[in-house]
Length: 220
Length: 153
Image 1 (cartoon, helix red, strand yellow):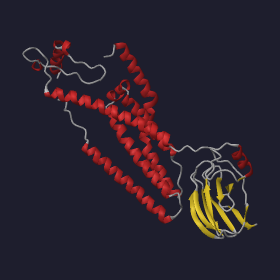
Image 2 (cartoon, one colour; image 1 turned 90 degrees about the vertical axis):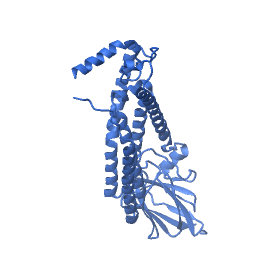
Image 3 (cartoon, chains in turn yellow, purple; image 1 turned 180 degrees about the vertical axis):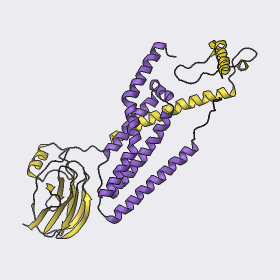
Image 4 (tube, chains in turn yellow, brown; image 1 turned 45 degrees about the vertical axis):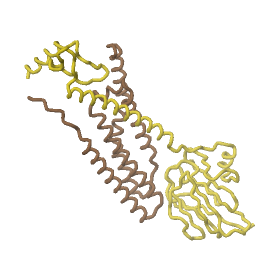
């Protein structure tokens, strides 16, 4: 084994000037044999060495491609991740303090983290002409895994579901009451907003765990 | 061709980059699949879905820093000095991506509490994991490591 290395060292010294040494890449140096040179003493790359060179170029290209793809995809994915726009306008502040808004759009996010908010059982006034109303419900604070279920006059409208920033919109019959029950608190309280189409009002409410908020419909 | 001084500087920068960024994300990539699997089991046991944006952020950042080292020639020497690193990155990245997709499906299925729906989505999650692992295995079979040779004693 020592003899093998001795011979290699001799080859190094002999062809030191002729080595094609790529300092940028840490590849093994090709040990050029005397057979690699033709009659005119011009280096002729052997087929195995040509394969190594091709392999090196392909490896370099594939590393570049993998790196570029990873960087670009990670940047794009970070931008595509939904970052909720938190409304801090005076109307939003007023809605937070009063728990009611006639002006804010469906889906408005008012807080970045859940806070204990107003617990209310509002009375909804309507003219009595409509039999059904649109109901939109969403989480106006952090989307942290709060679960609620919706009842209308002791009839289950939806099974327990997770409220999200994206509003869930449904049509419900207008009876005497709509009840929203708090099933699970993801942290900081079961904060939700509900908008009724019949009076175009949004209620920013907090449901007690295993408790409920009752919305009573009254004809004006 | 770089001078000796610039080689030393580049080596220093590469070592610093590895210690500060890549070592952290190597650990992150290694634990991400098991972490995501724990989340899936927790969803199954509690019956409620849970927010999972943090695992996506971790995977994206791992891909960014590992990919940057592969893209920039001066940092690419890290992969040359640690030949196992690129294979590790590929395997654990795709593994983590697979588990995150499964977690998203599980979260979607458990966003409504309904036993029938929950069971269907749980089975679907398991199918995704099995199918994904099979595909990764097929890929590994078709792109196996070549034996260059053996050192004779």
